[in-house]
Length: 236
Image (cartoon, rainbow, N blue to C red):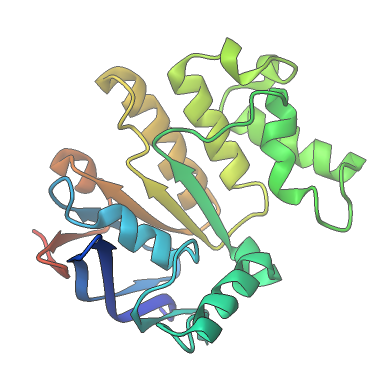
């Protein structure tokens, strides 16, 4: 298989006052098309930072991330690198990525269907019939058809995360990034959400990178990596 995503020698340091806190110290990984990869690590190890860099939400101090061979941090650590990162987020390539966050990140003023189709609203169809049809298909795929006209606040935590998953898949991304997707859920509800995650990814032959502190969940993926001391290593 060809690599869908390659990250090479990623460094990231945060500055608090006069204190520098190195979080990533040369993290590297490759993800093949159709592969599911878990990243495990202790709280504060930099898992979310790495996920944000892999998804173009934050720029590294140095290093490269290539999606389908295209480097979207060609000048990491410079002003032009930050500009390139912003342009990537606005580009069509960003549609190749879908995100599921621990805290759902739903818009309360929109109903369930509107939240689901939001990533496609800037597309050629806007809120056309094709967009709404796909939105309803995804809501059906995560068991939320009857909730289409409800507000996110009327949903349970598990339902909100399933809606977030439908939204992440709206543009049929090549890569799904899931950051502790069951972190706010009880074990039973979390299992239901994970079942939907893996079903949607595998049915569409998409790739998945999932951050989790739960080693049992990590074993559901094809491969697991541990993030410690700012670098990634194979985790059996």
